[in-house]
Amino acid sequence: MKATAEQLEQVRAWAAQGIDLNGIQKRLASECGVHLTYMDVRFLLLDNGIEIAAAPEPEKKPEPAAQPLPQEETPTGAPAPADGKPVVTLDELQIPGALLSGKVAFPGGAKGAWLIDNAGRFGWSELSGNPSPEELQAFQFELAQILRRA
Image (cartoon, rainbow, N blue to C red; front, top):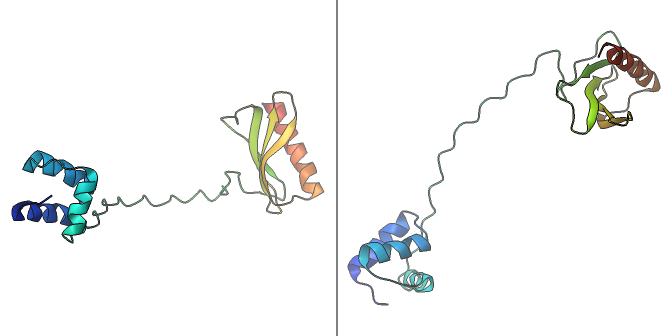
C-alpha cells in the first residue's frame, strides 16, 4: 500500500502514543477511510521504520500501609502464649467441613490451627513447629476446657 505523507505522519503520531497495531488499523479505517489487513498495517510500519512506543503504564495507586497486629496476637491469628500454657481459641467462623476449629499457640513457639470434623475426629489444618509432648498434653487439657464451655 502506498500511503500519503499525511497518512504516514498520522500513523507515526499514533505509534508514538503507544497505540497498538489493531488500534492503528481501526483508526486508519475510521479516520482515513483506508481499510488494511492486520498484516498490511504491520508491513506498513516495518517498511516505513515506524515503531510503536511502549504504552504508558497506568498510574499505580499507593497500597495501604499494613496495619500492625495487636500485641497479643501472632501472625497466624493465635493469641500469644501466657504463663507457660498453650493458648487455645475457638474460631468464630468454622473451617468448611469442620464441626469445630480454632488456633493454638504453644509456649515453645509452635503454632497451629486445629479442627474437629463432623465425625468427631481431631486433626491439624496447619502446624508450624514441633510442640513437646508436655505442650500437647496441656493443649488437650485447654481444648477440653473450651469444649466444655462451648
